[in-house]
Image (cartoon, rainbow, N blue to C red; front, side, top):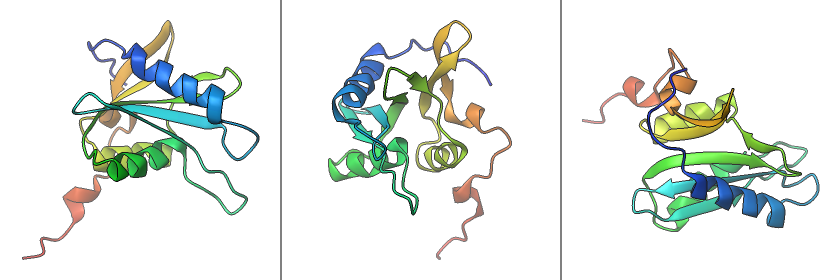
Length: 137
């Protein structure tokens, strides 16, 4: 994984942490995510756990962003409830984030605190869905 030279967007981390503290209650909502949109807005979301499965906070965030007219994300972070801090995205989320936002910066835990990495660096030698679609011409 390659650390980026970009600064860590502390405001995005604080937004996710705030949502985790205020909205994550019980077993159904245990993770919060926040992302900085291309226009500077911050979008937040929580995961939806259910015994049949459910989407992670990062995936709920993609839908919440689209519902608000946000289709470009620059930076994303996930934060766990009960003061767990920044949590890296799971493999499924890494793949979806790569397919939707290939230039996305992801805030992840590092040796000396948090750092920013490109989503492509978090999923090396990845399958890129768009590269394997047939043209509809």
